[in-house]
Image (tube, rainbow, N blue to C red; front, side, top):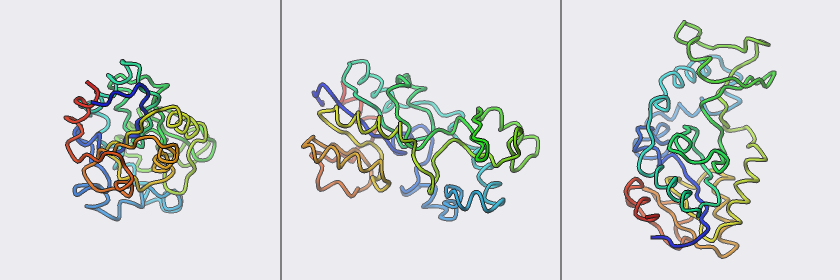
Length: 238
């Protein structure tokens, strides 16, 4: 059990695999099994190639996030918040499962955005994903903005796009306010998310890593756990 009174948490795709959402770099990850799928997550490829957008919309239509339910790992973080010990829940995930589990939205900092909304890349209009998916079912393979005709994209941060500065600032503040920093289910290979570990380490805070595979920060971490997230987290915060 972790008895610190102020804890910051960073979560990655690994916390949602038990909910049926595959990760990216793991043995059964999306990019591991289909390296070509990375083009769907590159903003230049997405804008330049209609065929990439068509494949991306097929991927979104079939996304497991629409029916996935939070698992015990998500619920353990809700309990940590209930105890008043969570300074912030920073996530690289776009699935919304932290909020669905009951985490306070204001404490959840979605570094890579959310799949539950859609942005127009031209007029910057944001609409619910639920308003767009029926157009795919009706046969529109690459739906355009109904206001300006611009390219539509899920409200997620692709490679080549900048993170929301306000969200990143909130993530940094949560890390700085904590006594302990925990990285859960993330490869810690993507920045600036992984850089939160550096902030914690420079301040002398314990770094705990819970991830199935090795990460670049394992040697600097206070504790490294390879056990299943959905069983380990409830024990850490009980």
